[in-house]
Image (cartoon, rainbow, N blue to C red; front, side, top):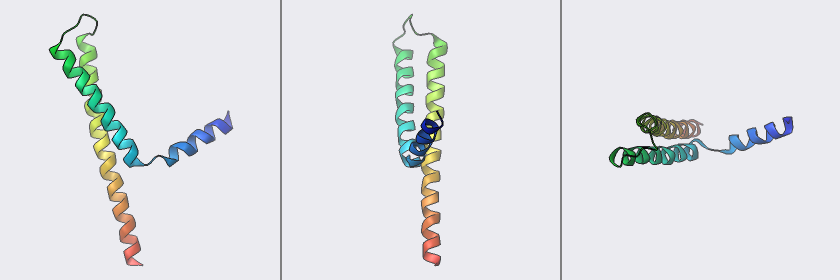
Length: 86
């Protein structure tokens, strides 16, 4: 179990913030699109609460993806400044 956990942890470290932010934004766009379509094409199978939650979670993921992308760019910029100072 511990070996598996360490393997998963190493794999997660290899994921860059840029990749994660792109994936979050893709998921967000899918959730927002599904919620918007559900608003205009009502169905008895999908409740209004589920539509609202989908749109809210999608918006949260989209904003989180933008924040992660901007923080990744700032970290890259800081790394370049340190090299130029040396």
